[in-house]
Length: 87
View (cartoon, rainbow, N blue to C red):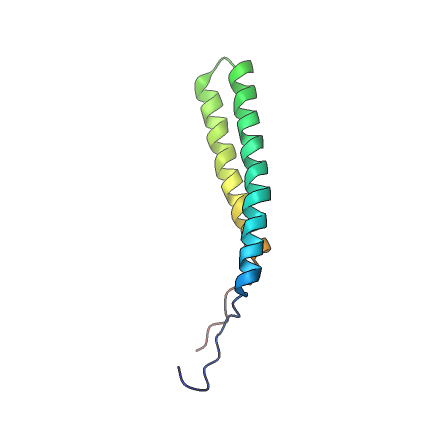
């Protein structure tokens, strides 16, 4: 790294990252966990098919992970797009 080094992506500050990740984990993680467990409990009590219950639960878990990843990026502040490639 010479004196002319300029990073391609600006990194968020440590306090911003800590606050964002704490809020993300505390709020969205807990809300998704509670909703998923409520759905699992409801399906186990009302459906007669265990494979159906497990299949729906697995799909909701995958969807929750996808939603959580996009939410994490939004709350933590990294750029939405990658750096431009130099030729």
